[in-house]
Length: 198
Image 1: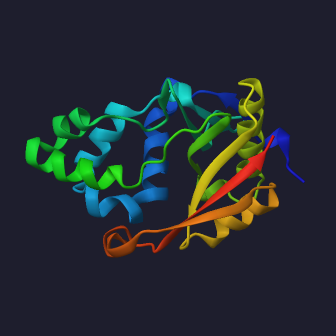
Image 2 (image 1 turned 90 degrees about the vertical axis):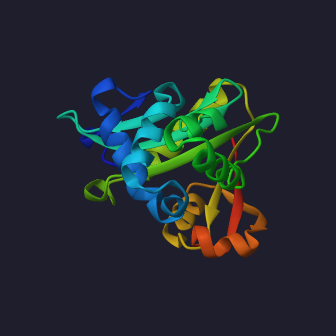
C-alpha cells in the first residue's frame, strides 16, 4: 500500500527541482542515451535547453525533495523534446546532424486518443515507497482529464523491473520493435509497447 503521507503528486516541475529532474533523467537513461549524447556536459546542456516542465508530473516529499518524475508527450510538446536545430545548437552542425538522425530512431509518434509517456524515473533512495505507482496513477488521471482513452509507453528488454511495475499497474504488452544493428549502440535489442485503458 502506498504511503501517501510520505510524498505528494504535483502537475509540472517546480523551478527549484529542474536540475535534479534532469540529473535523475540522465541517471535513468544514461545507458541508452550516452553513446549518442556524450560528452555528458553537452548532454546536460541539451536536456536543459529542451525540457518542458509543463509536460511532467512530479512526486515530492514533505520536506520538498523531488522523488520522481513521469513525463508525457502531446501535440503541444514533450517533457524532453527539441528539434534538430536544438541538437545542432549544442553539438555543432555535423555533430548535431548525426546525433539527430540517431535520436530520431527512438522517437514515437502520437496517436489519436492516446497519451504518450515520455519517461518515468524515481530517485534510487525513494524506490519501494509507491512513488512509481503513484506517478503512473497520475498519468492515467492526466489522460482522463484530456479525454484520452489510453496511455502508451515503451519498455526496453533490459529493464524487466520497470516492465513488472507497468504490468502491476494494468499496462498490457503489445507490439515488440526490434532495434536491429543499432542495438550495439543503444544497448538493448527490443522495445515493447504497453497500453493502459483509462
